[in-house]
Length: 376
Image (cartoon, rainbow, N blue to C red; front, side, top):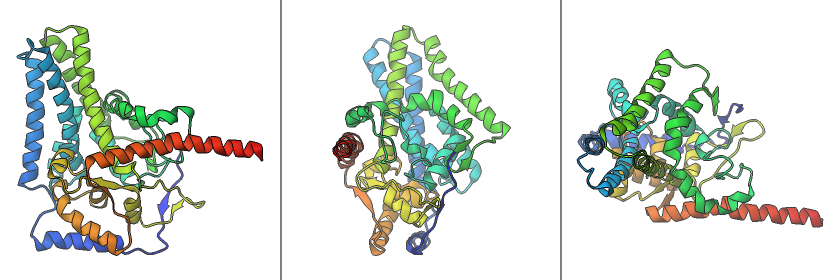
């Protein structure tokens, strides 16, 4: 069980109060709502309609004479599933899509149609990850394939980690399959997630978990098998390729935000406290990539600007490009890190080097320390 953890700021940093005031002033001065605008609703419609069109095209069988095109549609459906998670569900579950909670709740159900559970995501991501970012033993988002992938200095280093900078990317692809069949159930019945008491859930939470899970299973397994004249292995190829594509895109984007060079993995002191302001902690543990790229923002739903997202999760991601300039200049003013990779490829390379550092180099350091101890 994780011990209770608090943020205690001995320096009394004014960074967050200042940047929050400046961001608020930006919206007031420009008479802009922090919620979705027309461009955002276009994105929501685009990704939802695109996903529905791909699904209906696949199960209709119109492409059956060309299995190659069917396979491509499965890959695209997996990609669009990730896009719904990034661009639609994520904002809705954070309550940043609309000022109307009922609209946010309704749109959050889109998460169920990519195989995930919005209720558990709110707990594990919104509450736990956003509070205890990159803190070992508290942030379960850095626990990817425990034992196989080492993503923090607190994890035990094993011989297999020497090669993790090669195989970790392949394992990210299994994120969706794990999420669909295992992760949500495991977390739902887990008594504690980080510092969050997860022991009690409402009857509605139980109903939604099982109802929407089995609805998703029905839509992606029996329905295609009943409507399409395909063999079991052809179905399996399409189903697995869809999930691997979705999982790879989701897993990779989230890793590029927190496990790159420059980000830290702080641990509590002997009193169980993190000696830093929460907002400053976010700046040390979170990174951006392709911040100025409209295409990256359109695809990633603003998750390429995770710094802004972690500081202002209730602001719709459509506004992140504008407020990022305010956050960056304020961070420099207060001497607070603003970690960013200019492009997706540079972020990818940084993540690769970080995996190698936590794996191969950590193993070599452990070996050298053991040799030194034996000689001494």
